[in-house]
Image 1 (cartoon, rainbow, N blue to C red):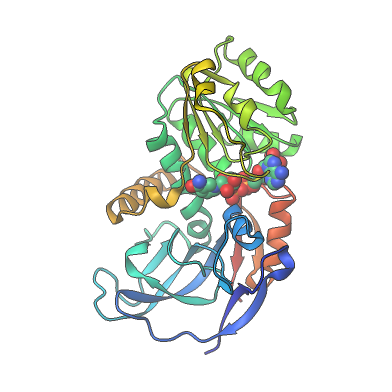
Image 2: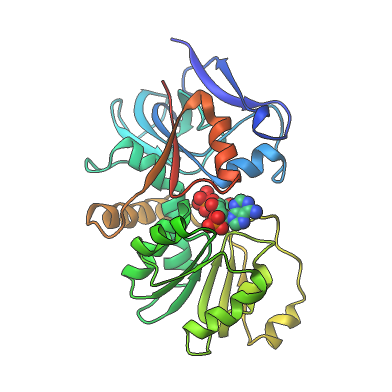
Length: 327
Ligand SMILES: NC(=O)c1ccc[n+]([C@@H]2O[C@H](COP(=O)([O-])OP(=O)(O)OC[C@H]3O[C@@H](n4cnc5c(N)ncnc54)[C@H](OP(=O)(O)O)[C@@H]3O)[C@@H](O)[C@H]2O)c1
């Protein structure tokens, strides 16, 4: 059976993505072969493709996928042929019909979570998990600001923060996105607000105080406005660069602005240890299965049309999660 993967030989726009026939050797020691049923699209895939996060080329792409174990390499324990599994990290190459994966990067899927849902939730949901449960543990009564509230991470994080008892303020660019954010946990939505006006609007919603934490995946355009929206001792979580990398700042600025905390986290450190990956996935799956978090698959594309998915995500035309379907 021929296998196919989306690969790129030079960095650039979506046009560099090529759908290629690939050879898939038998899985090596510690690996299993997974046949993909659905693949998740994430903003980090754009950073890899564009060269913002440099990689050796040519390269495969993508880290989020769900499927079925088809073959086991030597020395694999805890997985069997036929198991339904998903991943959110590991070597790049999730944009593929099938691939060999280190077994310790996979988690088994509960019966109640289908492949499309899994591909839409693994990377984004595990990100929401560490942001809200570990980086800054959100508690009842906290005011939190979540940028791109109608996005992939955003819709999950807003629902989860609300369920934890927070007052969620979301930012979005359009009225349609605002409606969606409101239906997914945001108590207040700031629509199309210029960065210069954001701190005053956030303070107006928080009795002048500001929020305990900002989750900012936008980067360059919002970074300073996010810092200026924090209450004293608040935490700035800069976790992405959708508009470009955040600027450098002097540590002394954090003192002037209220003894603030600043972190620039990435999921892969939070799930590097197998025990952390499994614990986070268990908590995420439980919240999906008990209905606390609804996963919004809002765009579907054939795997060979991944360039179209990238164009839409970069152009801010998507909401919720985007998945690719191998044909
Ligand atoms: N550090 C980590 O561990 C980690 C893990 C996962 C994701 N992330 C980051 O989280 C962010 C969200 O990821 P996602 O995959 O869920 O994407 P997404 O939020 O679905 O899409 C990005 C959103 O960012 C907003 N945005 C604002 N300015 C933008 C610009 N100049 N260009 C493009 N988008 C812009 C848009 O929403 P509006 O139009 O409503 O403003 C857009 O829909 C990304 O920065 C990603 O890198 C980080």
